[in-house]
View 1 (tube, rainbow, N blue to C red):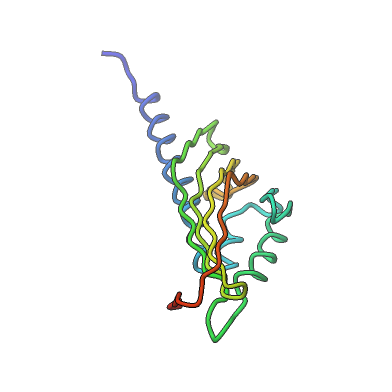
View 2 (view 1 turned 135 degrees about the vertical axis):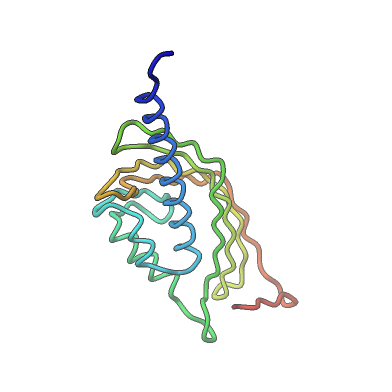
Length: 162
């Protein structure tokens, strides 16, 4: 019987990397919804390159600052903007021990209490990941919106915040 241990070990390492990258992207979505700028920034390598379409091109620190300026706005003692990010259909390729790439579909919903609107959108993330000090991080991310719908909330809509 041939020795398949190295091949098996490599396959297990690849599966572990895919699981770690998936957990990273879930932490990213959770930080977005929790309005956690530090958790958001912690998902990226320093200086990561981000192109988020209508939100612009920024490094990780610049995007975290923009995120905080939007996410931390308050109205009536609670968040002014309520977001729901669902990342689905991951397609992750591990290139080697320290680099990977992935694509995700975003299902997004937002209630903006400042403008009185609800938005529903979808789009695609294309990411590059790097292993840094034993942790997978996002090194580059591009988001392309596919479509969106924005509609007024109307006078009969009640939003319970928290």
